[in-house]
Image 1: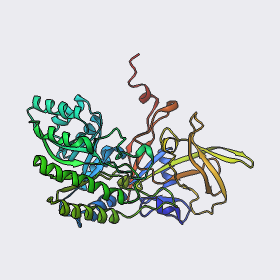
Image 2: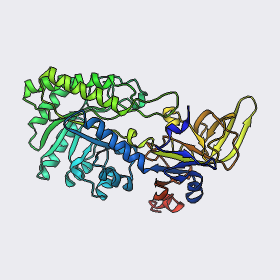
Image 3: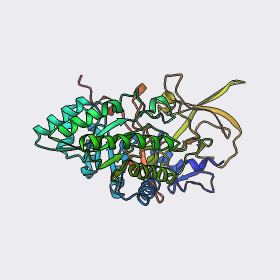
Image 4: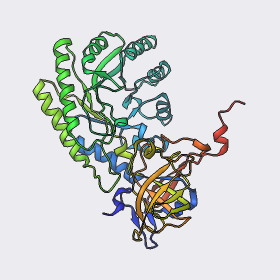
Length: 434
């Protein structure tokens, strides 16, 4: 199978054997902007936004699609999302601030998080955020008090943990009972009672999020059943009318050739059918359906480019190919065991002839980007391109070993625009006071 399918849409190999992304030669991008370099394809970003809006929208009467900013946030990217009519899922005061800096419509922004501070909630009230997704009893009382002080009445959703295992990595599973997030179903009735009684909060809906990289739709269907059954009980007990059902994100993307992800249409079909069927079964009016794709919007759109440095061949054991980046710009393999594919951007059409391990440059033995991948014979100075690098790599990046966070370029129709410059030594010390 061709690894090109993992890259942004319409990626190709030109007559020189170079990888071309968004009409731009990847080797020229590396030369012009340096490496490590993260390249985002605008056409792929827009296509993914339209796909989620279209596939869910044609199957359900009232859908709001929120982009989960934790996957990747940047001012240029937010402007694209605004043009595409997306809403946002934010999880911190910082993400609220970045979003507000581009005049994003704050009434389409939902604020998540299990430990929101008073300062963050005050900021949310100040910018008139659309929804606060309340995670716990402490936050219920805190937000009500802050809203009272601000003479505001804030729309909220309650986050529930439906107790469904989505069969993904334990570090990215969030919907099971043993989770730091949300109200367990056994506690959620009391949360509804309190929320309805608090004068400065307006409970409009329920939310759940199962985790990330969920390849099956069954966990969504089971969770929808649990949450809508709960909603029907709350209607009988407290006359609670469910106006919004937020089923979160977690939609899978394909990182490796041996693990394909289902199409957006499959998620849309199965999720909307489950909501319709269960609302009918439990006697509920159809609520607004809210979804929160993040990785599935931005993952495939991003490519990481690295330059090969030293090569260490241990005969009969392993050949290490070291690059000029690694765990400081992509820590996912180190903490999640995440797997990636790769191509040589400057010799993308050549046959694979050897097995190598792509290692980072940082002072950790665990700084390995890809174990045992088949590639053409590699030389120092070659450019390695790793697809599906759009989600979580940059947001989780660090300055470990004094690393400079990489530059980011946006490509479209053969033009490349720098949307985030590479850090410098001055950036590393700008917050030091002595």
